[in-house]
Length: 415
Image (cartoon, rainbow, N blue to C red; front, side, top):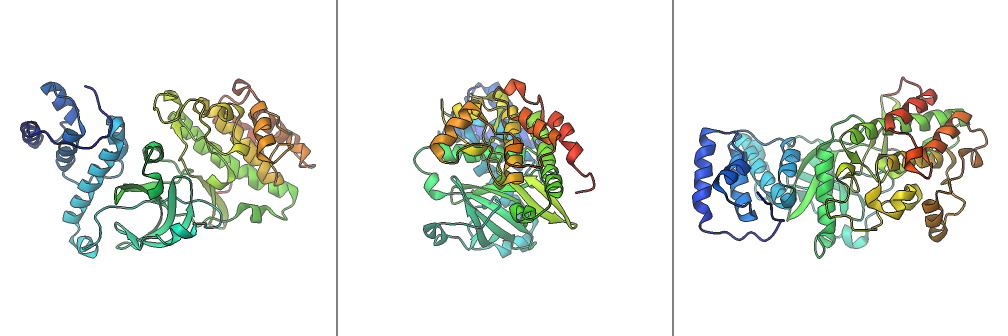
């Protein structure tokens, strides 16, 4: 059975008989999948069929389709991600409204679409034009304030109107949703990746949906702190200990993601969310906007040949040359660069202007940690040097092995 990409849904009257037959069969077997039904009928899957058949399948589950269902659906229909999210959101909201009359009346008169947010560290920054367009609410959430704006989405701090629980919500920017499909597809891929990852060191995805035809991602909200301010003025040994704890937590998250075939591709201090928990520093890895399955590298059609994705100062040489070739070793390279930057306040390069920096990144001209930090522990310098070798095959074979060596600098009582 072939799958056509998302397109304008054109309904064929002849489809009605298949829709009615699928609904009849689903009433007798709630585990029936629409792909099996269409295969037996010898019918090609089209958007016009996917919409009603997936609606029927989800309705027959009998309960509100939890967010854990969505990754499965996105994997089953990779060429129809926008439509799958739209159907999933519609059925989820309709089911929730039937099960919770109080919440239904609370949102009466509001648009039926959900909302989107992702949290970043650092000071909120939203362009004046975007600030004027901040919505008061998105789906079941009231917008409290903007947290930031990136290349694809705007991030808000929001509050669920019934539970009063606060979240971070990332919404695809309207100006990125028109023209080329690339930003939309990248955002859908981020949703697919993050909803499939459940780990205490990775920001948790809570809900997904659509808001006025724009995909959204609701995530846990973390009251982040500025790590540079915390590190400032700390004695060298204390500074090393704190930074190594943070890097160890990032490596735990990466080991989990890499084992599932996912490479992050944008490890940098701004995507490491640091916060206080029980008077200790905790951290989680966020922003999977550039993440991809390295096991299927080059097969998605999203990253073009030779296309440049990532943050220059933190990326590995092979990623700077061609983003699609970035594998797990590229993430480990970036972790070591983050460590250098957090410990010294500088990147491990001789130049900071973009033209020279790109050349040094591609050629792997990494400065050793002791070039910027006189009191560098010898073992830590060796870890960073191995993780930033020019050839990915000369780096650590896995995040777990890099973590095992880094742990000698980490206290084990933090959260």
